[in-house]
Image 1 (cartoon, rainbow, N blue to C red):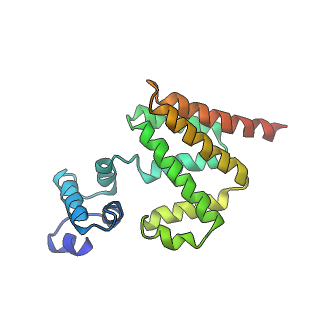
Image 2: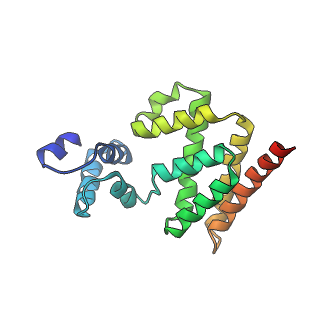
Image 3: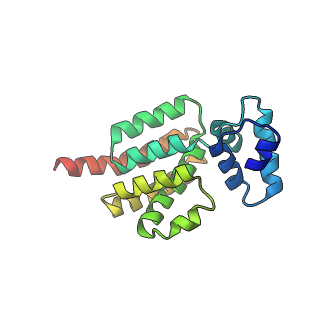
Length: 184
């Protein structure tokens, strides 16, 4: 992809090219097509444009919310979720991305050898975020229960006229309990 971008004199960020490659699941033709779509947007080949095209909320938003959740910061989690919602992002996709993100954080924490597998499907920056958040987990069972709650919320969100409500409830149920235990 990098070679094509250079030959065609395309202005494409390295992270954007990396996401194009990983999103194409090894299909060169799909990667070329996706790259053409990104360039046709006219704003240049930025990571944000690739994420928009793929319908992703984005690594930074997902990882930031994941960090607040793993830090057990209820107020910051709810405030950031409200900010994402007000910006018009797809909350169902956000929760799906968050579930996958936290699953990878936990997997990498318990099996560091998975980094080699993840390198085939994630960008270098994404792996860096996973390691950072994995090392921050102090209560493994809390993180596992959080993922289970988010999966349940995802199922509910798909059929709810108010997609934010099941996600907020899952966050409140998990973090409120943690806040109360910390005060006791």
